[in-house]
Image (tube, rainbow, N blue to C red; front, side, top):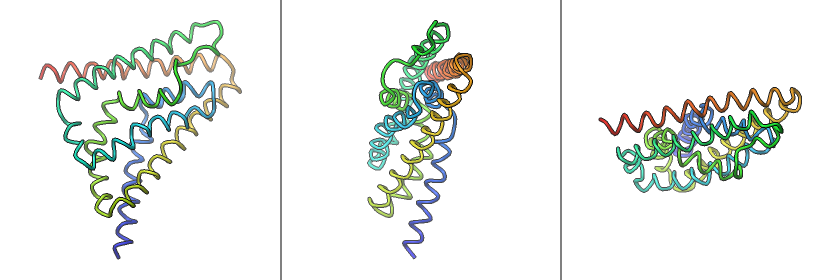
Length: 209
């Protein structure tokens, strides 16, 4: 009976966490942008994302979610996350106007991009501080083994989804050519700019409250 309950809790946890995996955000834009260079960029970004996410999940088990809800911590993450996204948007727009579009790429490795964007995304941190904490609390009741299985399944979903996105982008680029890539870079730049402004606005709003 307990095994069935554990499986049910695990299934529900993975299913709910998929909402965070599939929801479009800054990380999605970067996966698409880097996918123009390599079909495997998404998997590497997923690994970088996991480097931040796995320790975060473990620390939430020891009470980190309380820290993530502190107002000044959120303000700092929103502000610096917004600035970082603004720089990435600038780099993306700059690539649109380069003569050789192949050189228009985010600076740094895909793994580092995954790390930076995950650590600097306040909505990612807030999701784990609220919805994620509720999931982990239920899963952790069944012990470390089930928590490890949950982490492995969730991380696999991340990597597989981002790999699919980057592979589709890479193959589309090869089929449609450089014009498609320029349009894609423009759209991603606009998307990143939107989140940059939104994050900074949220930081200022929280500071003035």
